Image 1 (cartoon, rainbow, N blue to C red):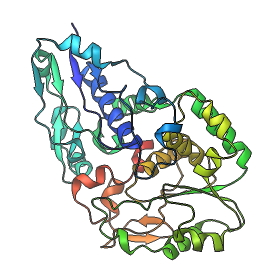
Image 2 (image 1 turned 120 degrees about the horizontal axis):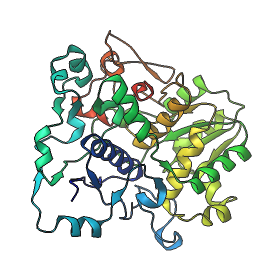
Image 3 (image 1 turned 180 degrees about the horizontal axis):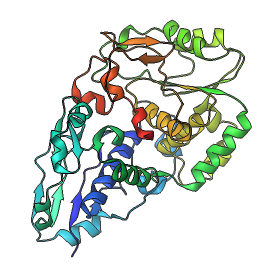
Length: 362
């Protein structure tokens, strides 16, 4: 009977759960274990749902929305396979606070120290072969910031993880929306919650958001806005005054495109969020919100398609020694990795989820 790697479903929303799934797939691949993760559980709704459950049809799960490049056991399969078998929970911290290296002696490499940037270095232990079921702690992290492998294995693993993508009906719908919208820029503006690690969130004003977007986007190019905030909110008044055309993507999909959206296999809030990410990824330019994993997935998608695509944000939510110009955090020191160079005033685990990194395309 095959050995099993058991990973928890993340407690967050769509993008958090996707990130946790990717890390778990990577670890199952590297340890040659069957993966168990609750991919059939409903994903759930975000902080301000655009579509309520009663009009949403069958709730989406990760398996419904995403292509999975390796088999993932169902909960019934996991229960049957582990009945009477011992389990061991790995003594790792939550993986946002860790970095996985290979081979084990790489932990002494100065480059690994720069990659880890204060996080705990962990390795794969050959003794695990004797453990039939290994259980992981929380796996929320961008895989670009977690896996510190040699160039060949890293590229092979990243190729595998890039295969975690929306299923064809959702990709095709997003492509059709992007074509009918014509040339556009896009932004993601998150406003409804204050996230841990973003100490200056409340001081960012609507005019600051407008100033950043006005600096990087032409006013006469349509601006697509992805947001969970009410489009009637005062936060968008400065943007409406500056840009000649603004389209709130949720309203567009649930308005003129609602028949096509409702015809998708799943058409609830998570499906809408995933489609929105795909549409934003196809924009001429994109500016997101720091600390949002929704933004991070879009920026990753764009970077994988164009290795020169910048990582732009609506405002500087951090302050400190960081330098923020035209929507982009600028290097303030030397270092082999982006997170070494930016001088962001964050504790080591926060770097793992606060944004995606250019290293995803290395």
